Amino acid sequence: MVESRSLRPFAVLALLALATGSWAWFDGLRDPAWINNDVRQHVAWMQDFDGAGRFASDPLSEYARAYQPAGWIASYRALAPVVPPLVLSRFLPLVLLVALAVLLGRWAHAHAGAPGAVAAGLLLLLSPAVLTRTAGALPRGFAFPLLAALIWQLQQRSGPGAAVCLVLAALFHPPAFLLGALASALCAVGPGLRLEPHARGVLAGLALGAALLLAEQADDESPAIGPLVTRAEMEGRPEFTAEGRYQVLPTPSLPGLLLQQASQGVPRLPAIPGLPVRTELLAALVLVAGFASGCARARLPLPREWWALLASSITCFIAADLVLMRLFLPSRYVEYAVPLLVAAAGGVAIGRFLDALLPGTPRRLAASLLLAVAVAGVGSSKNSGLTDYGANRDLHAFLASRPLGTLVAAPPLLADEIPTFAGQPVFVNHEHAHPFFREHWALVERRTRAFFEAYYAADLADVSAFCRRHGVDLFVVDLALFDRAELEAGRAYFAPFGAWLRELARERSRFALAAPAAAPLFARGPLRVYSCAGPDFLASGR
Figure 1: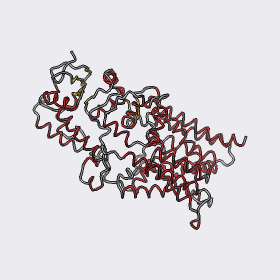
Figure 2: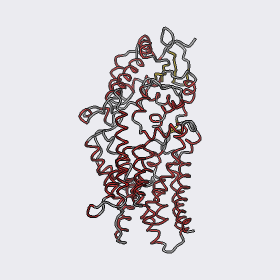
Figure 3: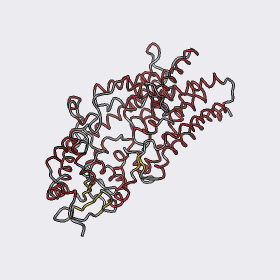
Figure 4: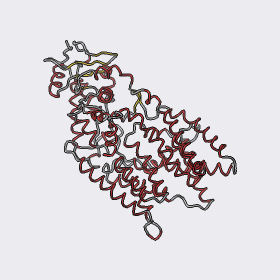
């Protein structure tokens, strides 16, 4: 009976997590068109696990495969015969969310019992940012539960358990391994620099995880992708700024990032008029202060494992900034640690407050209060991390009806959808336009300029030459992109292409594709699909 009661708060958390995830991702669970937008980048290429070879000679798919963690790929590949990858990416987040809520509850339970465990889990479950990062079951979706599991094992002084968590982190999310590795090392050393009893298991996990990462890095160094760019190469290039594809520079301020991510460990709250800071940040600071003051009043030490994770987060941020991009983005090391710590500390503070406010009160009352908060806050989580791509179902269906391996040239933002929903390779897209690797970026830049030169060509002969040169089978046109006002404003695409497209448009008195004579194979609204077959471009398919 005692064991049953001790497991009850975690069973409650599991049910709450399942209910929250089902509500937040309900549209994605019932409709394949609702997905996390990064599924298009990370998962779409995995459709080839069925052996059809639809992306066999596609350099964009090869790039997507090259930078994914080996363990994550292996898990999707192993399950592919039973659950297709795109389906798995919609349902697996529920499992990850349940694991995260239960594991974080374990953190808080040791310090504030069942109310603290449930409160900590609820704070995280109602955080839209956490739901967004878990949606899609991408590598980042594994970071939170793996770190939560590791800290719990360190609290239990379990060397083997910590070792397993470290190895899994190395296989599924390398930044989480680096975060966990330093935190584990700090916890393995006791007073007087003596090794703790569980240190042997931790050291084994560190060694094996590091070996796996080094082996994977050596295996993934593809000449076709090229080496990572250096900070010196990034300086002065707009593609690495907020106007570009992916903001890397300037590196965010560490204090500002810590405060920003602290607010991600609590639910979304209504703004308070006149308050100079976000309501979520104020709530996070109040909860953390309540946790710290509660420890001080009870003369309890602050949890060593939590401090170790915070110290690891700050240290990894600084190290990642010093060797920019070698350890990926510095901000990631704060984003995966601080929300967990704030939710855990907040849960303990709430649990202790309930015990102090209602001493001896049946736990059912405390549970009722927490559940009331959950019901009130769950509405803000609807569709967290999901985007609806159903508007182009008919286009996807048409393209999917063509032979597998049909190469499609389309405007990059529209092209992002085609591999995922039509199962066809594209000439260039936006999702894989990463400037981080020299050779890959050179390929993307060449293809992007070649595509837009054809898209805004004044003569169809230039479009025909483009298709023959690159082996393009179908050409997709969005008439809305011929708006000269947008082109003139430099907003047609991210830097540095926006300014280049403005100059290109100024040189062209007409756009041949804006009103071609041939009949399209597909037409709906501003969208047109033309065949590149035959001696002349825009053969109508007759």
